[in-house]
Length: 118
Image 1: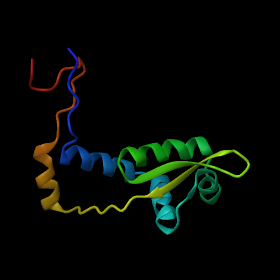
Image 2: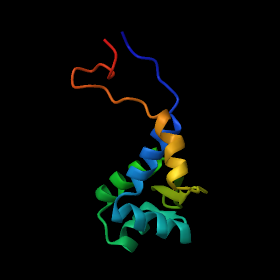
Image 3: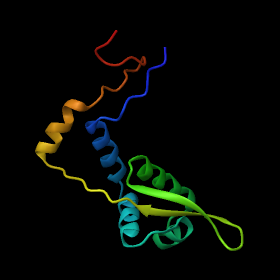
């Protein structure tokens, strides 16, 4: 039987955001986009990253809700992906972690079952 999709808990969301930010390339991407939104090709040149590597990092940041993107068509007909940082704030202290911890969903075990359930 297929499990129904659940809304991401506060704890799961915190892990998603922290995981997305736990990489020096992704921190540099967020920092660059905080200064100015730009096209993927320009961002890759500015940061000295290959476009495939940059795309992988952008996917992680977008999944965490830290960046947005849109496609634009240039005057010569080329599709260009425009990326921008979202307006996010992260409060991280012992109290916010304590509040998020009880909302974490249990990861599935190796056999695909949720821990603590038969």
